[in-house]
Image (cartoon, rainbow, N blue to C red; front, side, top):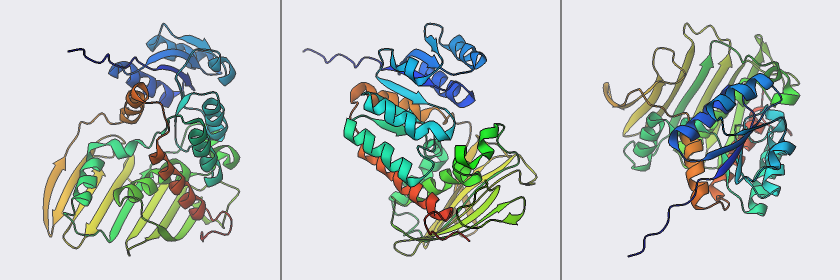
Length: 340
């Protein structure tokens, strides 16, 4: 019997070789799911560090130079202002794209990227990595199996005792927003993903910067935000995120889901950004479902590269990220939204 040959490894270019770009590059190499052909970054030091992990790859300084190579896909890990433009350029060149969040600073930018992927019939992935933590997947299985009953309340938080260390994060034109765009995007995505993306019927929010309440569509980045999402079917998701919060630990990250038949939660351990437990609650009783260690950060790009090797065509599931972007627009009060 003739066996089918395994798919060849996709040839990848990496645009952006900072910490996150290098981490994703190393994940692909460790999983042996792609060939790193070229790495582009304007910083010689960043390129040199990345190329130490992929010594056979070529160095470059721009997307234009990267596109001169024979590639199947591009991984984008640049400042947020460039994501939509860079992704569309690569997609229109016939390449698949894996992009760091946010894929766009606004819903309009996100829609344009998804439309470009659909028009080019090319695979688009966005690094919503917290979905792939085993603790998050444990919650998802409980909800899908109906073991909590129909969830009616979700509480999600991501508080960072520090702030970003790159100046562009604090420029709203470059970043698109502050802690909501940086951290809250994961919370909105998790809430909607856990419930299979119900319609968001209402959004109320309050954004603060340095303790000062901001108005709708602020021209500055927020460092604290709360939002309430009213979902179809009656469920309510409450979200809180911040930078530089005196939380008594490096980070507070958690997601709780409650239904009439029980509750479940994921929470970070000892202030860690990476270690999570998942628990199920029955009244006062707690059952531990997942514990660390769990090397979850590289799973989305590894899965994307594996799929790219099999089938580079458009994945309609990525349209869920447009829904997330629309909710963020409403949290920010863009276009007459509902921010305080």
